[in-house]
Length: 268
Image (cartoon, rainbow, N blue to C red):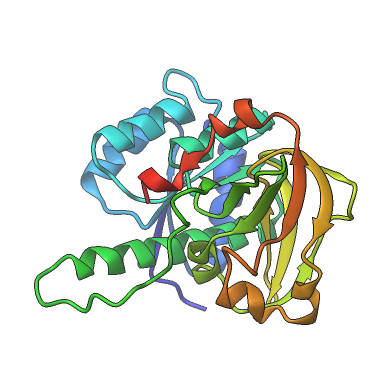
């Protein structure tokens, strides 16, 4: 398969740069390497990229500072953050600051490519939205945003607090638009704990790719939406209400909500 997308990989380890380039070029992507963020910023000024993969722990300019530089320069190229120092804080912080995904090292080729495919689809959607801003363009709805009272982690998962001290967790319509139609779902068992920033559900799609979703909030699962196992199309038809994934008793609601993006002030 030949892909037209151009990817920039930023990492201070040459072995990682070479490995990512090998995986991506085998899929037909064009890949440029940068051994540090300063060189990457220079490349971005000269060339347009469809996607950036960036390590967090780098000398001089780390991944978070690099992402800040991109935001300040109004560069909206989607960025996937990677790190060998994988912590929950790194994952949550990356998504809050604007990264479209977070991949802990070491990662497999499938994990990397699945994330890349989602990010590229995300970029295509954002470009369609920009096209709609032009006079005379088709203004049909591309995806349904989260309800205003919800909060989200990155663009993929949402949480809605309930009056009885519980919370519903689900995935966004935008996330659904970045993957193929879902043919299977892998839940975590009831009474198990989920942790903010850690994968809490996996979706198997019609193209046989498996996509994890990070939990937007920590808590104990008290109910799963078993109706989705009977009819997965419920999720695609109504991801914010009937298509919820888990009902949980949150652990640290006040603290963790500070790291989520209120959908009422959506930044996507």
